[in-house]
Amino acid sequence: MSYIVVVDREGQEHRLDALNGWRIMEIIRDHELPIKGECGGCCSCATCHVYVDEDWQGRLPRREDEEDEMLDEAFGVEDNSRLSCQILFSEELEGLRVYLAPEGV
Amino acid sequence: MKMDENVIAFEKNQPIETDIVIVGAGPVGLFAVFEAGLLGLKCHLIDNLDKVGGQCAELYPEKPIYDIPARPHCTGQELVDDLMKQAEPFEPVYHLNQQADSLSKMEDGRWRLETSTGTVFHATVIVIAAGAGSFVPRRPPLENLEQYEDSSIFYAVRRMEAMRDKRIVIAGGGDSALDWTLSLHPLASQVTLIHRRDQFRAAPDSVEKMRQLVANDEINLQIGQLKELKGSGGQLEAVQVKGADGEMHEVPCDVLLPFYGLKMELGPIAEWGLNLDRDLITVDTEKFETSVPGIFAIGDINYYPGKLKLILSGFHEAALMAQQAFRYCRPDEKLVFRYTTSSTDLQKKLGVI
Image (cartoon, rainbow over all chains, first blue to last red; front, top):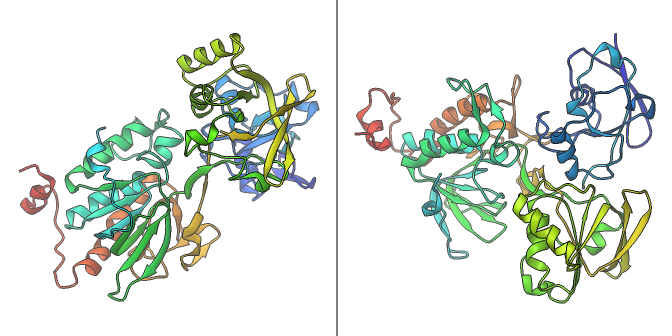
């Protein structure tokens, strides 16, 4: 089974089974980790914000303008910030490591 | 869609008598007006947004939806416009910019519902069609935030005059941030706009005006993100901003206005004594009634075995809810099931004959 690694806001590491074609947000939500994904994955909120591990940053498709705009509503945005609904899992992402970003309160 | 005529300002605390109060004016709430209307029941709707349509209008007005029966393709806003049109013959009344707050049972068995702005309803039936909850401002996760809220940090400007001669920091890059930057700068002693990048998604005209003010040194633009609040006793003195260069910059200020969009939360409904499953309201699948008789929950807010959070599921739930609502509202009348294709009674209600 393919997998990704997600580090939650307490620093706890989770190895999650991943299926091709699933959005990273959906994988995280399916495992009941605390990610909201309020809009359901259509890049219309900023509640699935994650940081991509340095080693992986260059290996992902770049963020599109729409995603960059939506990140305006997120907090603590960094160069490696992504909305995880905009990353589709595929075999090339086997072992992808992301960190859950802080949420609005 | 024209709706001004239906947005009526009611005198404070003058109770509004109605059959049904619908909490949430999203797609499912709107269709509930239609289904209740066919049975002759009158509806008032409450929504915390400043517009009708819920998530469809707020989150994805321009995004295409493909799974509405007989609508191969429509945008969120088109769906809302058409649902409003469909509900129109039944004269729904929209009470916007307010949140359903307290609910209590009256002596005559009906409900008394009061909103955050003091509108009071007396209704036989309450229908909760609140989606993922009501939209409220997203608050930045900064240390000691609560200490300054409502004294130095505001998510909306209620009175412009209160901002006179203040040093104001506005955070965000959308229309709210830009609009308030433009309207407060003549009043304030200093305005600093803080945004994470030097691109703004607000209306181009507002962005142009803001750029001009920056060029004329009338306002400050700081590219960066809020990191820390400084002050004491609820009075903000400065904010620390992490610049695009990674350096920290201190911006002195009296007032902070963060505009990071909206989030959804269940809010006061959670205190109404209904059976919940996490943040969802459990209902039966015959009438979509909650654990409290006379209170229904339809659409994304409810839970039952097999529930799918689809707009079309909410439409079905609205139709079945209306049947039971009729029994509560018109206990002495017999409910006759009719089709809009053949019933002259329904066609009259719809205003087509």
